[in-house]
Length: 149
Ligand SMILES: [Fe+2]
Ligand SMILES: [Fe+2]
Image 1 (cartoon, helix red, strand yellow):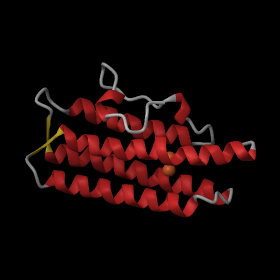
Image 2: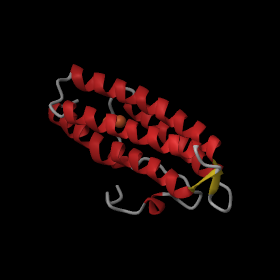
Image 3: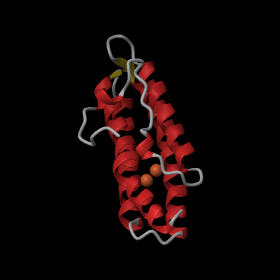
Image 4: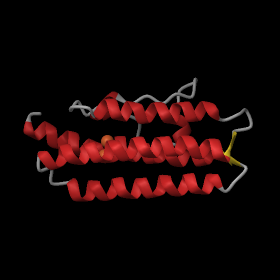
C-alpha cells in the first residue's frame, strides 16, 4: 500500500490507472466489488481529460455525479454491514461518508458553473476515494480480523 500522504499522481500507473492496493482489500461481502466500481469510474474520468488536462464542465459534472451515486449506494451498504456487526467505529465512519458525499457534490456543482475544469478537480475526487479505501475502511478490516471474519 502506498503511504497515505503520497501525491495522487504517484498513485496512477503509466496508463493513468489506479488499482486498489492488495492491503486495502476488505474481503467482506460486496465491499471490494463496490470499491472497484468506484475506482473504474475515476479511471474512466481520468481518460476523459484532453491533452491539455481540461474537461468540459458539464461532462465532468455528469461523471462526478455517477461517482457520487455509486459512492452513496456503497456507503449505505457498508454502513449496514457495519451496523449488523456492531462495529464500534460506525458513527465516525458514517460521518466520513457524509463528508465525502458533501464534498463530491460541491466539486460537481462547481464544475457545472465552468466551461471546463482542470485535472486538479479530478484529483479532489480521487482524494475522497483514497480516504475511503486507505484510511477509513482499513479500520473495518482490522475489526473484521479481530472477529475472525
Ligand atoms: Fe468502502
Ligand atoms: Fe467506508
